Amino acid sequence: MTSIVHAPLRKVITRLLDHDDALNKLFPVDMLANMCNSAAKFRSDDLKVTEKHITAAFQGSITLKVNEMKVGNTDTKHVIQHDRKRPNKSEPWIASIGRFESDDVEKGEAVTKSVRLGEMGHELKGELTTYLKERAEQAKKRKSEDEEAAAQGRGKKKKRKKKAKAPKVEDEEERKRREAAEKERLEREKMEELEERKKKLLKDAEKQLLAKQKANEALVKLREQYLVLEEEASKLGATSTRSSPMQIDEGGRRLFYILDGRAGFIHYPDGVACVLPSEIENGLRDLPSNYGDDYSYNNTRRNKAYELHNFGACQFFVPKGAKWVANNHQV
Image (cartoon, rainbow, N blue to C red; front, side):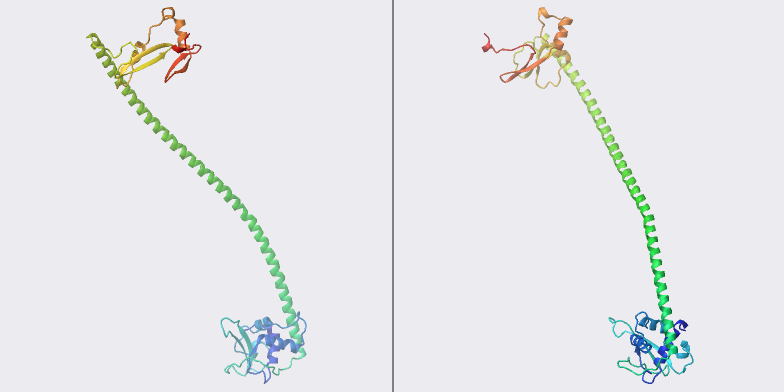
């Protein structure tokens, strides 16, 4: 059942199609709109029948009897058929309306030339005018409501955007917090790794130092045993490798040194890996008689500074304040 709101427009179209020339023919809705405006002599754009009006008035009115469409006391043998088709998929839909003698007649072709129509009386024109004005008022009201709703919707969107910014700020702060925590975790892990490596290196160094100490102790023992054997051999008349004279001995090395201001020299064979403190002390030269083993002299010798000098290809230390002169430069 179609709406009674559109009854005035359906009445007008039914009356216009109530002519033998218009019977059993299909009229496109745009043509019907022009026919209505022409019959009612509507000239203003604000007051005229449009395709939308006709489509809304006959929507769902396929093969309905005229009296069932709320158009008044009309002949029930006539029916209104609303046809909608699209010849090609790429073309728009075409809506047409026709009045037929019965619902079992073959649909007519679309009208391509002018036909005689029924007359529109003043009463129908007045009803149509009222209908169009009401439609215009309703359309205006709907437009106003839509604009107001759209404005409210934009306001809501703005509010939602403002509210949505807060989570973004929170998300940004949370991201920065996570990044700072991750950075701190990485630095902590790096420090822990460095500390672990440091402990390992210290442990390895301690092992190496302990091994070196043990090796030195073993060398000292060997050196002491060697010196004991050397002393026994010297007592038996053998030549000592710790000879005091500072001449060059084959198969050995010479060590000239200064220990707390006192000069020393020792000779040891090749292959000797360590020198004992006792050997260093035994290798010291005798002090001059006028600067003997006295606290004051020992303190002076211990605090004396030295400078490195060269003599040809050789190097030696000279006490600061002293000067050395080659033999060929002496006066």
